[in-house]
Image (cartoon, rainbow, N blue to C red):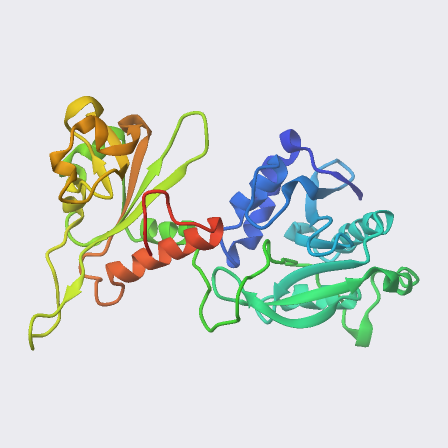
Length: 365
């Protein structure tokens, strides 16, 4: 078995295949893709991240580890963001070799502390693996995107001299280490520990709605066609999808709200996703004037002033319809289990946590 730095062109497919092991905790495959391609990831300095792969005798990648060096607040700290081994190669000491590769590099860099997160109870193999290699359990650190509690583990590098004097297959208390599913968190949970996930990832919500047939995409000019929009209440997300750059979430909105009149029982109003096409603040699917077939936002006037203004002066931002995509989450007959307001909040909360800001066309939350 040999260990080397990952090569994006050569190793990306197998890295993504192995990364599916992390999906029990959340949608982490795209994160590992960004890691190996050195693309931005929230809360991670990708420029200081190394991804090492383990190869067998025929140079097939069978495992990897991702580690970020010089983590704040101390440059002497490094964080392991993921370590996993192909199940066909489990219990052969490969995860231990990957870990010791990281420790060796840490010693060369004069790193004094190595940190990672792993599941408190949902992944006992990983917790046992790290503690048997000298990591100390620092207690609950937060929740994974899918709700499992995470614990922080810390290894003081000077203490590894004791580990190196022992065989890697040592069996404390007669228990053989298991390396079947060694997974840790990709980004440190933020905020207080709560009995619910601090934020549910957008892609996780989208995947669920796709699986139950309540998700619809309106691409380009379809978004200007009233007949293409779903009927009934729901939530819609407007994206900019340029051909030469990353997607940008422009707006998250809802259709339908519960209202009470007098002493009557609360009722869901007649708000419908189709009505969201006809707004003129805070955005507009423009059909007239020089910006026809463009999505506009950043109004220069109030809801009453906009109709009185010249088309050229109404909005600060204009985007061609070819770059617009609308993702619809349909809630018909589900409103009492998942209200439009709750779903809208969950999606905006994830964006706020990930980007530290609202989508550019949302002005309040």
